[in-house]
Image 1 (cartoon, rainbow, N blue to C red):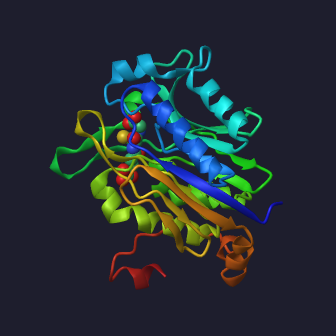
Image 2 (tube, rainbow, N blue to C red; image 1 turned 120 degrees about the vertical axis):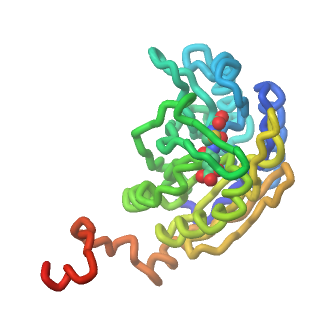
Image 3 (cartoon, rainbow, N blue to C red; image 1 turned 45 degrees about the horizontal axis):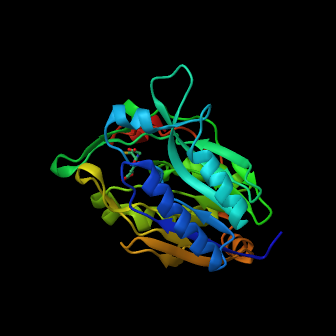
Length: 287
Ligand SMILES: O=C(O)CNC(=O)[C@H](CS)NC(=O)CCC(=O)C(=O)O
């Protein structure tokens, strides 16, 4: 297994039309490869960030008649990099909703793995900002750790970040790098993004790589940016700020074993009973 790999997050600001987004992804991927990256990742819904249900459905990827998938396959082959298409909206047979699906492409252009986002962002934020992701997307159930030549990679997407049991399961199944392509909201990003991502790295002893959408999108939707690459001790190796561009870092994979030796908590789970609600005063009598 390689000791080091340079990873690059493409921090983009996707619009509602597919072609210009793919053009940006192509340009940034080639540049990241020229700078030595062997694993290149896009954010969540990098192919199209479309707020409305009907246009989104019409423009979504259809695996029976794909357009973005062959684009990424060719790009992986051309550059010779591992490429994570962080996610795209994908039509499913006999289903009214789309999948919010990540694809990992190998350097030969084959699809090494797929992952459908499990946790749906159905949330009312302050100032009338609200999301009902489950009205447009069907949640996934399958989880996946991919054995690449450089490391074992566990796939997640965006709001999954708030469900630490998923990350623990991936790490306990052997993951060494956890990917979190995202399109985070601004108020929640400001309050939670860095802390949650660092916590997932610390809890699992994994590298966490989180390419993020940034800026203002169709209909005024705003995303937080700050693509992050974090080491297994929780240290931020790179922070993308708010600009469109490439956010990269070299991962020294020996850091995984070092962090896990210092704090081996990943192997220290213990069974515990469900919490018992104790009412003060009655507790002593119950015991
Ligand atoms: O809508 C689409 O096309 C694709 N889906 C997204 O962008 C999703 C649902 S709106 N965004 C998030 O999960 C942000 C989570 C977040 O911001 C938090 O957890 O605080």
